[in-house]
Image (cartoon, rainbow, N blue to C red; front, side, top):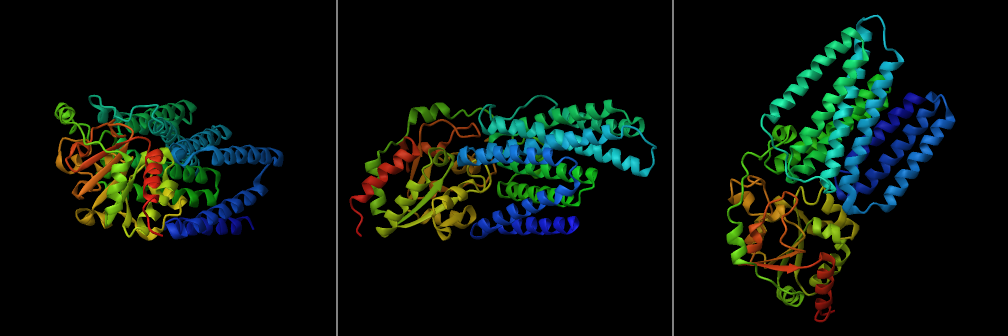
Length: 461
């Protein structure tokens, strides 16, 4: 019965991933995931030595999860995901160490070697996942600077840490001593820190996705150690899907998958921007809500580009109201989504879905970029790096080669931002200084509310 329950849970998880592949089936996918996890928890009961401890852990963990679900805003979801990955990594470390301590010595036959390797892999993968996820959390929370950590011979240092860890594996298997296991845990923990510190802010969504993959492999290694088939299957699903998503994102960003994961991508190519002084002398074209509203009233086509600024301001519901008003006025309104907009893949899609904005008018970058040249107004709401023309025009930029939304090709660009501060990648955006760009300075929610108030006065019902 336990094996059948595990099989049912595994099927639910597979179907859950399938449902999450499209916005229209995402709710069903989430439900199936919840059902699968509930089955998995119930199926674990027969193997539980202490029902009280199991119930206590369930109550504590469930309470923490419920509180987080209620309190954490959508804007903080990326860092929440990152820190949850660290929990998976830490659990793998603890299980791996416990697996060794339960049987520290034994006859060194094939089964014993396999057991020791399982303990070792669970510990090092979990350690890398834990420390890397903590650093990712710090960067996403802006407790740590998003600029990549660059120092001489850093890739050599990373390679040395990996080789030393491999040597520890041989030492651990032959000597069956705890010291090489703990040493390897520290070495791979340091490697996790260096790898994520070496990755710039523009590539952080890929890092979060890859850490998700690491957490899956850590869980799978733990499953082998515990002899738990479901944990092996679920870990493999999470690990493979996270790796595939990371690869797809790197391809969409024109990044080398290996280079991003190794850390420090683009650090050598980027340099000081000697145009900063020229930008400051030229200045920007400012506009007020009244000016922008008048332009929106007469526009035939408008494309809205949501970004992290919209998420922080929680402006998605006001954006939906503004969209409905423009549509009633005969304006064609669509949304342009960049693959890495926000801090997490799908971040903007979730926010727009939360505001009940119809799926058909939410388009991906490749679909909508060709239409920019025929668009009257592009309204950029708190986006920065994903609309930076330097990605295509400046080979020295940290964003060089990354496909972006080519908003500057529209007749007029209206950028809503609090200030001219650089985006998460830490570089200036020349878009704001172009002749066809108007800057609407202020909180995204307040500015959109002002636009809605102006539009309500003239819309024909």
